[in-house]
Amino acid sequence: MIPSRTSHSSSIGPGVVPRGADPAYDEEVKREYDLRKNIPHLGKGSKGRPFSIDPNVGVMTRTQTPYVTGTSVLAVKYKDGVLMACDTLACYGSTKRYKSIQRMKLVGKYTVVGFTGELSDFDYISTLLDELEMTDFCQDDECPRTPKEIYNYLVRVMYNRRNKFDPLWNSLVISGWDYVEKKPFLGCVGMIGQHYVDDHVATGFGNHLARPLFRESWKEEMTEQEAEKLLKSALLSCVMRDKQMMNKFQLSKITADGPGEISEPFAIDTRWGYENYVNPTKYAPGAW
Image (cartoon, rainbow, N blue to C red; front, top):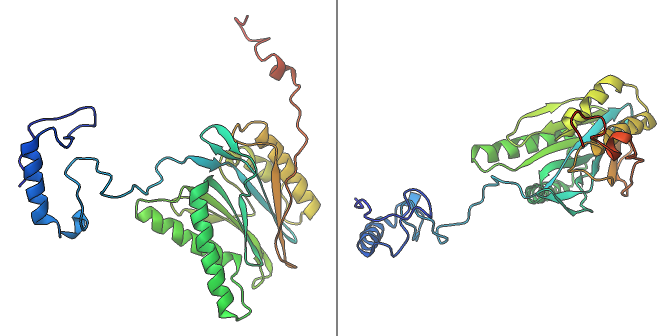
């Protein structure tokens, strides 16, 4: 066994002995690791030591703190297809850093996937979807994957990574036209694999701001124009309240005619001249 340490540096963390602080202890650790270097759980060729931070041991891959993130994605069904909308902003923390990021991806002919959360994790998911699409293309059987199949695949991917304690920090919206069942499809997958199918979905802050509007106004026989009007009213509600969102949006449409379309960026009319915005403390008790 490795003997207990005789010195300790609290600056690195509890229970951490910096290399070189105790040469005798370093020698004991080296001798012990030489004996155990082929034990699989230590990692082949690992030079780490107990309770220490050693860059040679390996790189931390878990996304415990998202860095570059996108906010809400909104989507609604209508009688002929599905509309999805989101902004083009990716924030670095609270900084509006990247303002022209397309947060929706066309997968095959009949599916669009939108994301909320970490941009780099969605890049990885995009790679998986590209490989899936290439495999499907090489089959050459004229039977492209349905949006429901893409949805179920992403459920398994997210749940698999959750079980590895290395989650992909995204919420995904999958919209499309199911050419087998002849009807629109809309589903949502969370970062630990939780999932549901509904007539309208929203992720992020939009789940609190947009869903009440959808529940109040959505109808099964909505036309495309009515669905677009409902989405834009929900986007207005979100952009006026969500500091992580900007007034630059894209809209995707999937119908039975296919292929899916993703629009050019557009802005919606906003108004910031309300008196409470101009002078927010005018009627507040005790204000200057």
